[in-house]
Length: 349
Image (cartoon, rainbow, N blue to C red; front, side, top):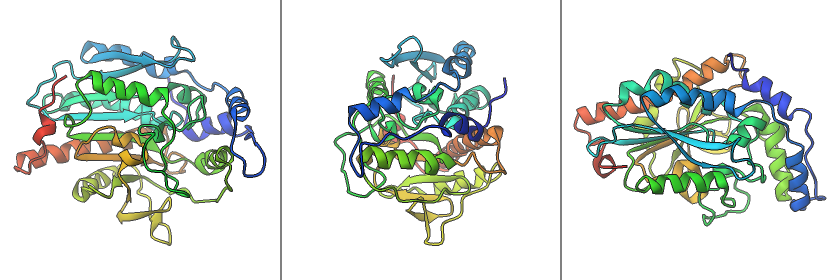
């Protein structure tokens, strides 16, 4: 089955939708959230496009159900895929996709990595892949979950809120709570992982649909922005690992183009640290999925699926290139005695 491109799907899903209003600059209440949720439409099947692809992986990998969304537990089970033989002597790697369910290549890229490339790294790393953190958002092609909360701001509800900042923590969600509980059940989320790669997209509908919806939900004026034309990475400014990020950018540019900076030297309003890499405050302080572990090598990928130069296959391969180049860099560092390992390598599940 051929996946339809993200741009076409998002048009079908949100192009005719309306954004509830509680009145001028008034945050949504329960009725507006209910109105928003009931107006969302199912556009694709999580079972057909994700769960069926997990079944053959069980021959080689440990495929585990770690939870389910309460609105429909049978329809929205949550799964991870991990190395069957987890060894304390190997560095451990976490890969997450579909934290924003509408970002197709985050999900399909994680699955493609498992199908096509993960086996080559299975003797060097303990791998834990969570391909679709937000299945309701995947089916309805929505950034938020069914409660109109952004899962990628919900991993630390007690994080610092700064007025006017686009990256601010939000309330905990079932999606984030399930993943955090899963990591704890597997032995803890800190001191265990060398690397975490969180797979995302930045789409045209961020500007046309989701940012206006966020402004309406929060009762603030919508301020238009720009959508980057190309791939970029989101680094933690407190731990930027610029050589590692540069290696990822160099690999991805062989698959798709890299986003240039805006005239003011930013991408999505954030400072550009080097080509294709922006820096933000500590992801954990912002409630981002990229901060669920204390992995010394952590990043968020951002693929641009709406470019005329990209299609679904290109976007998925770009995600795989980001993962494999990140791991190749760590392997080269270890061979060179650069110490890519340490305490996080000694993780047991």
